[in-house]
Length: 270
Image (cartoon, rainbow, N blue to C red; front, side, top):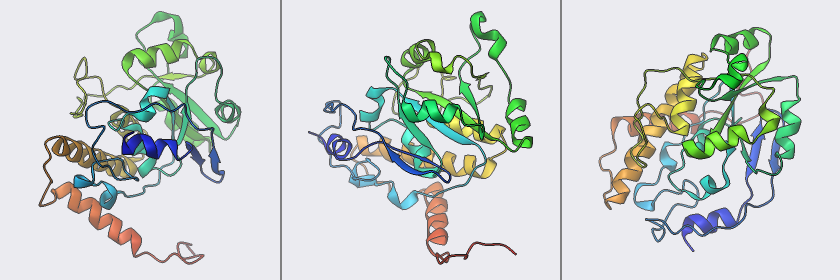
C-alpha cells in the first residue's frame, strides 16, 4: 500500500462551505495506488514526494465565487490530480464524489439552496443543451443579485467528464458555462489530447480570473505552477534548490499570513 493510499484510507472526504462548517462523507472505496511512483515516500498532507514537499507554499485565498468539484471516484487516488490544489487554496471549496446510481445527498441539498447560483462547467459543443448555455456575464449578474456564483467542475478525464455530464440528471436544470480562454495547458504530469484541454486546477484559475476573483486566481496559478514543477522534478529524483521565484513569492505570503493576529476581532474593520 502506498503512502498516498494509506492517507486516503485514514480520512473521509470533507466538504467545506462558508459558514457551514465541515461535513464528512463516508470513506471512499479503497483502491490501492499501483501506478508509477506508488512506492515513493509522500508527505501525508500534500501527497507530494517529501523531496519536494508542497506544504511551505500553501497559501489560502478568498473569493466571491466558489468551486464545487464533482469528482470521479478514480481521481481521488491519483497523486497527480489537481482538484485538491483548489481545495488547498480556497477554503470554501467542496468536493463531492460522483456515483452513477445516485447523487451525493449534500450536493443535492445545496443545489436547492437559493444562496447559491451554480453553473456546470462544460463545453458547448452539442446542440441538445444549447438552450442552457450562458457566458461569463451570467456570473457577474448573479453577483449583483447578492448570490454566490458556484463553478461545478467535473473532475476526471475528458471521457469520464462527458459521462458524468450525461449521466447526472440532477444537473440537467443548471446553466452550462463553457470556459472560453486562450490559455493552453501547462500541466506536465499527464499528456492531454490537445493543448486546449486544461486540467482541473487550470479551469478553476481561468474561471476565477474571468469572474473577477483575480487575487485568488493568481494565488492558485502560482500554487499550480509550484505543484507542476515540484512533481515533475520528483519524478527525476531531483530536489528543486534554490527555490524558484514563484516558490519564494508563495513562501513569503505564507509567512505573512502566519504572522497575522489570530485573536477574535483581529480582522474586523471599523
